[in-house]
Amino acid sequence: MNLLLLAPGDIETHRLARVTDPRRLRHLREVHRAAPGDSLTLGVMGGGIGQGELLTLNDREATFALGGLDQSPPPALPVHLVLALPRPRMLARSLEHVTALGVKSITLLHTRRVEKSYWQSPELASEKIHQHLILGLEQARDTLLPTVSIEKGFRPFVEDRLPSLLEGRRGLLAHPGMANACPRGIDAPTLLMVGPEGGFIPWEVEKLLEAGCEGIHLGPRILRVETAVTALLARLF
Image (cartoon, rainbow, N blue to C red):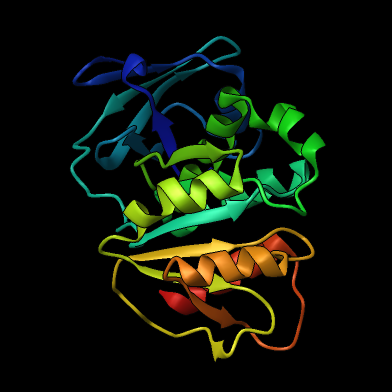
C-alpha cells in the first residue's frame, strides 16, 4: 500500500480522518509498522493526494490529521480496455495491474474460448472487483476508480456496442499472427482488444477487423493474458 486511500465516509472533518476496516489497519501495523507521529501518503477517493499525520492506531481504528490533499493523481491512460474474461485468478491480477498502470475504462467480454464457468466466479462480484481496483490504486498512488462493464454476448457487443466505442478512438486488436507489430508511444484515444487464453477464434477476429479494429501483435511469443496486457499498455503508452 503506497497510498492510504480514504473513502468519503472516512473523513470526519476537513482536518481529521478515521479508518476502521481491518485490512487497512492490519497493513498499517504489519507492513508500514506505523506509529503515532508518522507521516503517511493519503488520498481521497476521486480527489487529491497529500500527507497526513497518524494520531492514533490500535486494533479498532486509526486516526489521521489531514494536511493539504491538493496533489493531483497521476494521469490516466487514454485507453478503453476490452478484455476477454480470464480465468478467475488471472482476472484478479489483471484488474490490479491495469488499474495500477492507469486504465480507467474496462470491459470484460465473453468470447468462444472463455469457459462459461468463469462467469460464475465469486471474483466477478461487484465487491470483489472493487477490492482489486482499490489494490491497484493503492499500488500506484492513484485515487480515480476505473469503471468496469460486463458483456456476456460477443455478437451483441460487436454489433451494438463496439461502433460507439470506436467513435473517436483507434481500435487495436491484439492477436498472434496479425500483420503489424504493436505501435509504440501513441497518445491518441484508443480501444484495445485482448483475447482469452488460446486467443480469439478466426470468426471473432474477422468480425473485429470488419468493425474497424487494426490487428497488431507482440512478436512470435505466446504470452499469458496478464503478461500480454501489461506489455501492450507499456509499449503503447
